[in-house]
Length: 505
Image (cartoon, rainbow, N blue to C red; front, side, top):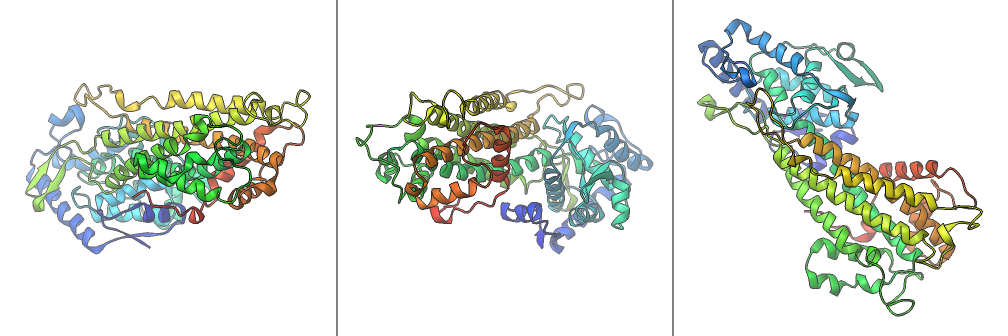
């Protein structure tokens, strides 16, 4: 059971809720803060004070006063009108993350909602009812308005949800679980949709996949080192300590550990004096990606515990302030950085693939073919990797450098952070497929060299990979193998105990 406080949610707890389906509960102290801030909202409505989003319209309509008897209609109209998301839905795990993050931020006690709103969000998580939320339509400022409106629809019994493996009307799933829809009261609709939970949820899932893939890339690259009889001197600890980046030092250490008992790697001068950069500079490039992941993780951990709606209530209701915490710029930058860093893992992997298949760059059979000429072997696998790498270059163009005004120029600068998070996830998916192709080529090269000469760690990895892609004895439809290895890399638990894994923190 994970206890939400609005202050202390971390990646370990998020992983448990998202992937182990652990249930959640709100701390008693945080619920008291929620009740306290709610009393302020009720007083504002009773006193007919002019406070944005409570007794006024939204955006350009912030100067329109709303009568007391219309505050519930105001919130209902807000949710329905803002549910303008389009395109394919977010993955179900991202939807679950959005509900979790929205509940956590409301528990900070700055938002003025009733406790029943938080309780309903927690019920959705514990009943595994996940809103169907279209991916496109958010500008990443004024909050993720469109995506979060689709989340809020479920609380009032509208919209669709993922439930027991199906897409069903929300009201049906709620009824089956004995959960009653609620009528949103003053400020509650606004509190549900003013925030960065769509981009942050997508970012969290992207980060978790990126972290695992980055570490997997090291053992895949280690197999490539064996397939190409790479020079281990470039991984000597003194070289990396001389530069001083701990992440670079860590990559080199792990690869030395993976390859410690290999009979296929070489020393400088045995076959050649230096390797190409795509082999020699693995610690420098992969280490730089890990540096980026540290930055991204830090920003996501702050944001998952942040108050991001507007206005916010402070000092026991003495201060109600309109601000801009819904602006997604910190996460937009982080997501763009993540996309760039993961695209580079694909870039260097594709160059290693080229060295594995190009007969002018190695002494292996051309394109690792069993019968060069008659059979093409891995020739077009490199084409596919090159295509994915080029697509990543387009996707890695920073979304955060763009902005476009909205709401009659009231909201005149936006972050595009949700687009950035979606693009980062696409880059990670493409990068995994590139690494799947490198896995196929490296295992083929190592089997040609002689599996018995491999290091213990890489030999086991090759053995596991062979359950998803057989040795190439003749040409076949390699697309199936690529997808099988890609799915394996995505789903397999990956432990780095043997490589003395150190935390990113």
